Length: 237
Picture 1: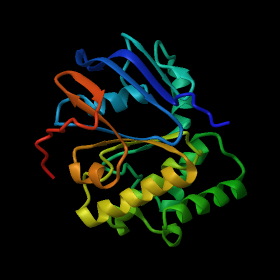
Picture 2: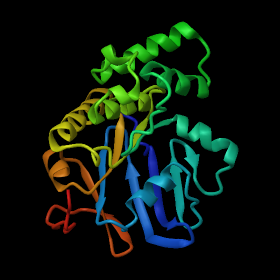
Picture 3: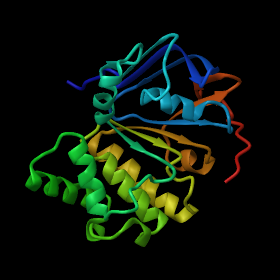
C-alpha cells in the first residue's frame, strides 16, 4: 500500500524572515511523488519557506513537520540529521571550487557519516550517471558550464537517497535551453524515483511546461492555486 503520510506538513504556520513575519497561517502537505512549485513575486516569502523547511529559520507559530522531524523547537543537534533526509539545490550551485567534482561529492558523503571508500565510490558513480555527468568526475567546477555545475549540485542532492529535494530557483542563473535540461532532469527523478520535489521559481514558462501543484505567495499568504486562478507574477526572466 502506498505511503500517504506527508513528507512535509505545515499547519497555520507563520513564516518569518529575521524578525518580520512574511507569510501568515501557512498550510501545506507534500506527499511522496509530489512535484510542488512555490511561486510569487520577489519579496513574497518564497525563500523564507525554504529556509523554514531546512530549519534555517525558526518556526514559532503553528506547526511544521519535515521528514519526521518537528520544526517546533527542533534542537540544533538534530538539524544535521533532518537535512540528511532531504536534498537541497541552490540557484548558485554552492560547489567547493578548490576540489574536483568527485571530491565535492566525497566530502558530502564523509560529512554525513559514510566511511567505506568502495561504497562511496560506487555511490558517486551512480549519482553522476543519474544526471548524465559520469565523465566529469575529475573536472574542477570552474571547468564546467553553469548547466553542468547545476547537474553536479543535483547529483550531490541525491547522495543520501532523499525523501524530498528542495530546489530554490535552480534554473535562475541558466539560459532557457539549459534550464529546460535541468527541468527534464528533475521531473525525471521525480517520476522514476518517486522523490518529492519542492521548487521555488519565478519563471512562469517552467511551471506551465512541467505541470505540478502550485503554491502562490502573495499578500502575506501562500495558498495552493485553484484551476481557475490566474497567477499574476509580473515575471522578469
